[in-house]
Image (tube, rainbow, N blue to C red; front, top):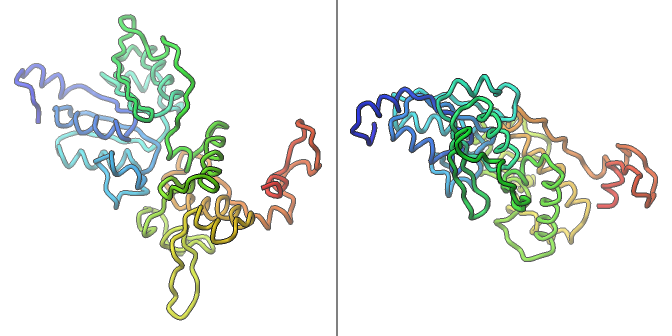
Length: 325
């Protein structure tokens, strides 16, 4: 399928090898437009999995895809649009050493659709060294940017100083924080949710699904204790009908339990973390988080120094942080 009448141009498009980095809001549109234009050889990479909040703008995904690899599902869907396309996906991080200069030289064009500055700079540098044209695009909140980068002919992504990043993807903050600033943003959001204006749609906890069937490699028998099959916010209560308690978000749980610190701690750092671990695809190339329980931390004293000191150089143990919480 192509919208061009020039046969030579159509042939050139069909023979080109395109590398799409990111299969989110921009990446989904790129992939759809590429196959509809006539590109036949596409490779896509994305480390993330699909969330419910993605569905209102990432139109290649449906509810049954939640919890699965973005790169895999996006590839499958565009393949249905254009069965003759040769598309390869990687559920991986572009920052991995596997995707170096030699890898980039396999392509005619690189199209970047990333949501963080470090990765965008990394791709920019690789394309410059490999001397491969780059169409660089990204978004931050309501702002979007796109530029074409040719080595020696146009300015590159890093040629102009960038302002300090102040917004971060919500899925990164909830599911895969990897930098100190991510933890600070998470803590500010948690404080606002607990004590500020109540917004049930802005929960700091990972999104839940109606069923763990959304997660491709997890069975009900493999669920941790006290984590029910229908989502982590609901705790199973054995009674005559074996029913489940009402769905509770973080604010509702806090109000229901009188803002009891122990219950909140276990919700945020044990129950929510166990739920995240159900998303098997999310941890294929990432280090898994470790669930921690308030009672176990306080009783065991896990961690470093236990000195109750105000010395800023004293390292607090995890158990002391739990007591402070």
